[in-house]
Amino acid sequence: MPKVIYVGSDGQGHAVDAVIGESVMAAAVKNGVPGIVGECGGNASCATCHVWVRAEFVPLVGEPNDMEEDLLDLAVSERRDGSRLSCQVPVTAELDGLTVDVPPEQP
Image (cartoon, rainbow, N blue to C red; front, side):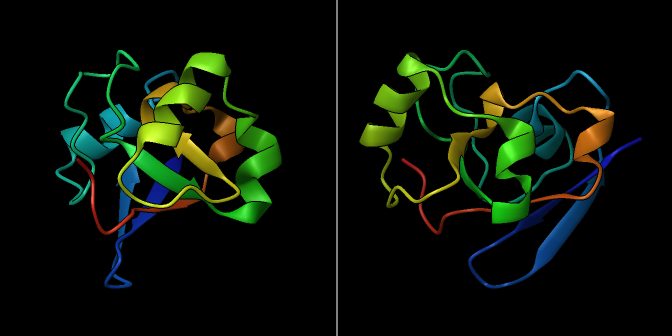
């Protein structure tokens, strides 16, 4: 199982085993990762699962589509390079060790 590491604004990391094919958001919610709300259940209609993907993983997760871009513009926390909605990032074997920073605030 690939591991995904979520780093909170306090610097504390939460490593979870994720199932290939599930979203980075679903893995976080299932494992009680603080700061990932996922209010819309992964339907890309809120922005409560906003994360900052670490630079070394950005090429592996790809770029957001137009709808995700619009939602990221509405996110409470600042938009950065690597900003993604974690519900739109599927876990793959290549993402083992994926590290994302969780913003201090979600809506």
